Amino acid sequence: MSYLYSINNFALTNAAKLNLVFCLILLTSSAMAQNLTQHHIVIAHRGASGYLPEHTMESKSRAYAMGADYIEQDLVLTKDDVPVVMHDIYLDEVTDVAQVYPNRSREDGRYYIIDFTLQEVLRLSVNERISVETQQPEYPKRFPHGKSLFRLHTFEKEIELIQGLNQSSGKQIGIYPEIKNPAFHRKQGKDISKIVLDILKKYGYQNKSDRCILQCFDAAELQRIRFELKSELFLTQLMEFPDGISDLEGYAHYADAIGPPISQLIFSSYKIQGKTYSDLIREAHNLKLKVHPYTLRIEELKAFPNFDALLEFCFETLNIDGAFTDFPDKAIDYLRK
Image (tube, rainbow, N blue to C red; front, side, top):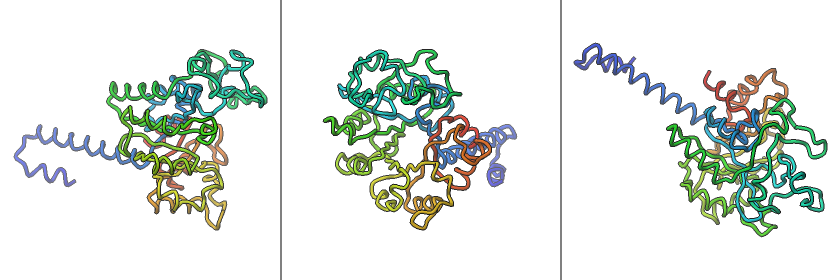
């Protein structure tokens, strides 16, 4: 090894040589681990949501302890313009809002978070996601519905949790916020993107090196964030099949990554516009776009015999750069093998 050859040219004691070799091994191992992380990132989808109710502080803390590279925050606004970490503009799928505020639904029967102040929202209990139609949990084998006590929280509180843990642990775990349904917020007279960007700036997230990746499904809004609002953050254009298939070159003008649905990537033999999804990943990489598909779940293995087989197909065969998963520990364990 070249390291040993160079060391032998120095007039060092055997003990000093041994110590130096040990230090070089540590540095090499650290660099290899860093390169792996840079190439393949694990994004904790709504936290460690396979184990605890989604988007709770408990779920985020567990995802942090598992060693996820990034932790996701879906963001919606309250009536008083506070970004709350929640996947939907509706409250009734993950909280007890119908019991606490039985007469506050809209004409469609849904409870919109934008109709409630932050203080009202903080009174609600959070549970495992249920179907509004059946009132049954979407994933029955996950955390028991209605057990223990979980609450919603603001975007700022979660940032403070992650940054606090970064300080106390010496780690650099990133955040991966999503601006949810900006068109809906705009119709309600609210500019969610500007509000979110102001908070990100307050906490030191302004550039691509700041361990923050901002995502959105709305292409027009993501372009507005880049060009009108002048954001220099790393941006991910989320995609819905088959939307956006022919727009990769357009995305590359303002985005740094794409987020396609994993269910479509799995069926890589499926052709649209004459190309398979593996071709599209290759084209995205040619355009310097990272590929971060959503969402890898143990309950949704598709044609794969186990979760490791799904992970192997995604990371090795498709050559994705990172993935959103409800089970970040499983993805981390796989990548460490």
